[in-house]
Amino acid sequence: MFKIFRPPKLSRSLGLGLGFAASAMMTTSILCDSIPITRKITVDELQKHKSTDSTWVAINRKVYDLTDFLQKHPGGSAIIMKFAGKDASKLFNHLHPIYVLDQYLEPENYLGELEGEFATEPKAKSEGGVPPLSRVFNLHDFEFISKKVLTPETWAYYSGGSDDEITMRDNHSAFARIFFNPKVLVDVRNVDISTEMMGIETDAPFYLTAVAMAQMGHPDGELSVARACKEENVIQMISSTSSYHFDDITKETTMSKWFQLYVQPDRSHSHQMLKKCENQNVKAVFVTVDTPVLGFREKDFRLRYADVEDDDTTEQFDPIKDYQDPGITWADIDDFKSRTNLPVAIKGVQRVEDVLLAIDHKVDAVVLSNHGGRQLEYSKPPIEVLADVMPILKERKLDDKIDIFIDGGVKRGTDVVKALCLGAKGVGIGRPYIYANSAYGERGVRKAIQLLKNEVILTMKLLGVTKLEDLNEDLIDTRNLKNRRFHNDVHNDIYEPLTFPK
Image (cartoon, rainbow, N blue to C red; front, top):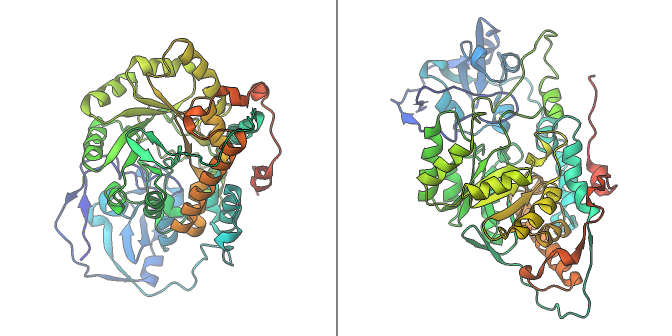
């Protein structure tokens, strides 16, 4: 039986293009009558419906009529027409949660079951396997390996930044502008890096931050990430735009988690998610505040529209336009805090003044972040913002009023330690773990966490420090931090420069 779910009348944002699965995570589904599969549609019949007057697409052996959906698609009609009369399963499954079709198409859009096979199937991955995990020595290795095995579209989505990618690259380079002042003749035989963050005891001062659509890189997506986090006792932040449903991820393990919230125009969805989080072992909610619109991610867009032949197309794919409300204000944060007993943090803060406002609004924590360099180009590296924020908080005796987290550009244990020395409560890791998951699944994520733990411990031993509370600004030299020069390291060899039209 093929079950159709009809949501409340919302914007039906079902993207076949690369990006987010609009508002699936936040929507409450209403179960309708089951519809039996009675019709068989041959490949030949499917291939006849490839015009704007009749647009059929096959996804996971089921055929859908998307003719009326063409003009509703937030990515424009061109990407759907590219798959008209064809099988879009591989691309769709890489880019979207498995439940999106059931939630965002009407029953009449479903036509029947596909019968027969297409003559050829494009290969999703490159030839060859991955090296044994024993050959992986750092997080850069995972990035290099995943670049070889991911599809070009998925690699562009995960690795790309906005505009000229200056911000994305400088997020990492900024850490190289900070040096250490190590102590000697300290007994460092026993180093403890365990801590507590937002109500969760954890074995490391870093967490795996929210990254959209993990299933694009690995079939288990966020589920393998959840398992790895449980085994290594580190915190997973669930993305609003996860490939798997919120319920599936929270039920995968018993370990407490955090949730990252995009705020929709209809606030009732956010209110529902706050209640869900309270009931499913989520210990804190992080509201993303740096995405009123989507940054222009050129690598992603260039690949998405590579095969579009319409020279006059002006359609711009913006998956957040129906998902993140550009009208969100501090009043919304106050409202969320009044509706839940969970700690509420805001993610995407990029200036001292907004940290001070967060304290005024009784926000529990902020994440200094520029969205991994995917939003506003030329926004400052978060580590530099951290260096600006903490002295002012300490001067005003406000440093105990709010927890400060940071993400963006973190690739080494030394990066984590530098942020902690500057006063961060914890550090978010994004791309590195998604690369590890893409190449190796759960084993890769566990290895990435272990490598980072070991690097943090090694750095602390060489610094002459045995516990996290002893990390402070006396152990680092930040005089060169605002020089803003690009440091030439191994990351530059992996980085793929922007290209021009072919």
